[in-house]
Image (cartoon, rainbow, N blue to C red; front, top):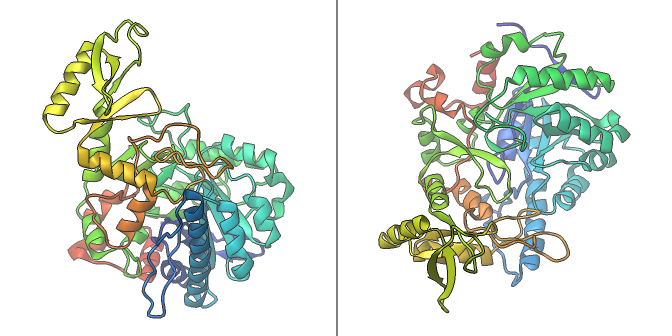
Length: 467
């Protein structure tokens, strides 16, 4: 195993091992502070971060507003309060070692307001901001205001070039690094573009080499690139270390920190991680963000797959589509719509086994669900808190109109509801369980034999050995 080279951010050198930020109460001040105390760079999430009562218990996300806009404003206040608290916890635990970063998602609701709200209070504690899930054009400008480094998360050289040309070239001195996140292997939301095939992964080495070449053309040859997604043990990445073609490289670990003593996920979740097999992580496009994401293929995700499979195209008038000749009566008023005879036969089969409620999608199709599912979907859409800048599931948008202008999409789900529930001890079968595609290795890695759960310090030390 080659010796790791430290990376330079600003005027300081750091161990090139980074904790990947995981949103909605998963990467906390505790995990971040412990990672930094071990000598690395810890990253807490400011995506709906937890805040606590006087007994140290996390405060539930409760909304009292009658409208989506009112609930959106409440969520912003809670997110700022939680981000500030997590930053303080991380700083106290780090005890001056390592480095503290904060992660935000550009497409989360009111990202800029939350970033300002947190940084106004803790800019002396947070030394870097990572940001992805979209094209974060303004994050450089915001971080420069608080004299904090910014580290955009990208999945291609082309994406970074666009960010640089539009805004980052104005504040180059605060660019702390560029996170390359493999869109086929990373957990959570991934940056696959429309031109890339989700079933045909590309070599991360070639893509990072292209990124470095482009950065050198921009005078950024010594800015670290942080490899994220698919990183498990460094012995598999030795040809990246001290490689003149790639330049300064660091490695980000998102999945492995889930299984540590400091990790806030439930014991049941930790045990489930130890049972995963290769292929149990699914790259899918059910997220209301519109991005691809990777999660454990549990009953929740299987239900979304099945729901989309119970889908047919239709026309509202006879003769609009020559193939749509079969009539179907929909709604309380039993209005006529038309579909193919083959699809009409499928609908009869679905109705016979309980999937009797048709729900319209924005794409001129119907999906069929049970009456209970339809009731839950509708209520979740009504209860929307505006956690995203734009939500396909509820049709919320943070713009002046408060809507995307499209129908709400029943093929998706309320991501706020699901992630809040699972991160606070809720069902592992009926919620979204984000994970990277290497998560199956918990079951076979000797480091976790006999259900061993290491501390963050033990994990960081183990990673440095190459294992």
